[in-house]
Length: 255
Image: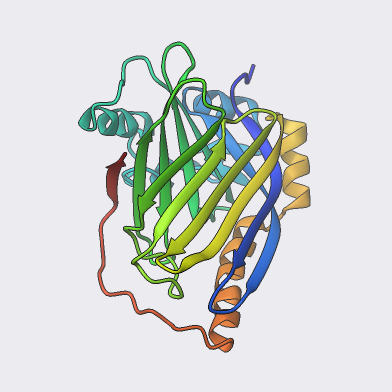
C-alpha cells in the first residue's frame, strides 16, 4: 500500500510588480514522492512508470545529478558535505511528473526528515529553460510549520530579472495542503511573487487518472506558458537580460 506519497492539486501564481505589473496563473497537479516508495508506485499504478515511458512517469535523470543515478544517494552525499545529519533519513520530493515523456520543473523541493520524522533540511532545486540547474540547501528547525529561508540569487532563471537579487522562500510542511512561495527582491523592493498551492489526495490509480484527465497536457502547457508570458513581458518593453555564463548543476548550502 502507498502510504507516504500523494497528489497535490492546486494553482501556480506569478505576479510581477515592476517595472510594470504582470500577472498570470494556471492549474497544476504535483506529486509528493517518498523516494523509498518509488518502486512501489511503479508496481501499483498502471498509469505511472519509474524510469520508463508511460502516460505519467518519473525519471531519476530529471533531478539531482541528472545522470540517472540514485537521488537518495545524491541527497545524502550533499547532506554529508554540508554537515547535516544523514543517518536513516527519509526523503520526499515535490515535483511535476512527466506526461507522455515530457516535463519541465521550474522548482522542485526535496523535504528531508530524520528517523523521528522531524524535518531537518530543505533542498530547493531550481531549473531554467537552458537545461541548467542550481540547488539551495537549508537546514530547518524542529517544530516549525511555516519554514522561511533567505539567500542571494545565484542562478540565471528569467531573462527579465537581474542577477543581483534576493530570494525569500516560505513554505508549509506538507500536510493536507502544500504552499510554496518565493518573493524576489532587489535593492529597491519586491520584483516578483511566485507561489504554488495544492490540496492533498491519495496517490492511487483512480485519483491519478482523474488528475491526468483534468490536466492532460500540463507539462507542455507549463513550458509554453513560460515562453508566452516572456513574450508578453518583452512586448511591454521590460529590459531583456542576456545570459552570460553556462553552468553545470551547482549546489550551495545556505544559512
